[in-house]
Image (cartoon, rainbow over all chains, first blue to last red; front, top):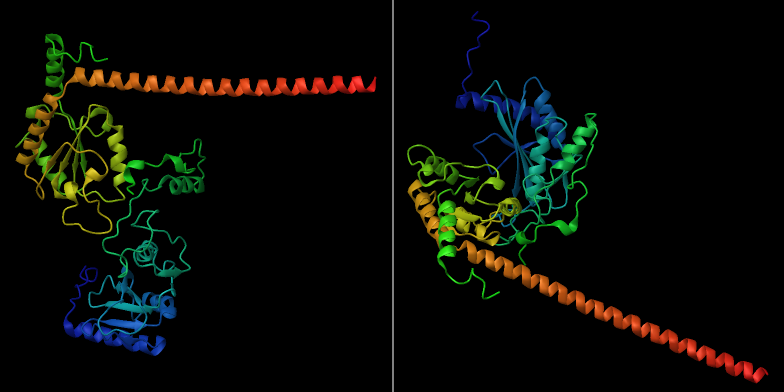
Length: 216
Length: 214
């Protein structure tokens, strides 16, 4: 009976340091990863943007690492950052081990404007939406993403609002609500259903927008 | 249209107005357009401690077809604005709008790329309630204000104005039709005249040609 119930591991500072040192040794050997100078207290490593996919796969599949949960993907815009030189954007991947609270890692990849990062949506399905969100807000392109559309902002929205050079006082009036039915109908058709009557949204009529919500 | 019965206050019209307004103001059914924490305060207003049904707002209707008051409680984003506009258009007349809370009135503390600076940019608003979120008493106050506003309206006058507008539209349309008809007939007459002129010229030509040939 007592074998079934594991005593929960507690993440003490010593254990954290131990595991992070072990994982960092592997990463620096295999992928030439370096510690992030901006976050000396956390376990944060910087890798080359082209190696992101390999690094994440290694962290997920390796027995010694086993980071089997992708918590979040974060974009950073370093425009106007104090004493900073280098590529403008960064993408951060936050991973953790579900069973071991001492195992948490942040993988950071610097991306220049116009460059792209390989997608990890084939490794973690949740990365699909997280990468869409980062693309939506920062305009960082994820190469090989199956469906890189806007997630939070409206389809008519122009620009990427969380970039530092997006004007803070800029407002955009949108004419319609988001088209949700085309995607739904496509999904239904792929499941074998036949669409008897197509909604107006699929074949949109440009004259039919709601004028009141547009302000010139 | 000026000498209709509706424009002259009489016993019948004022009594009818009174009855209609009495009915309207004591059965204001709200449509709760709740998008943020103000909606929680509205729930409190509606439930037994404060009990909005005491003033006739018994039924909170979740379809715009069956409600009179659009109660916008919460932050409205630019993405939400077209939906709000459509909901307002779906409300059957007579319709009133209460803007509840700082966010719906002015955008509140959200001064960013995605938040609408007040719903009055999109739809007309009758009563504003301040507060973040306003207390149920404020909602009651707004409902009383709205009742005052409703009882000031004149059903017969509105009807007369509506008929007047319709008559004007009809007159304008008929005038337009008449003008179009005249223009078209003038054009047709001119065309016919041209044709006749041409025929005449052709005939003269032919005749002169035949004369010369002979």
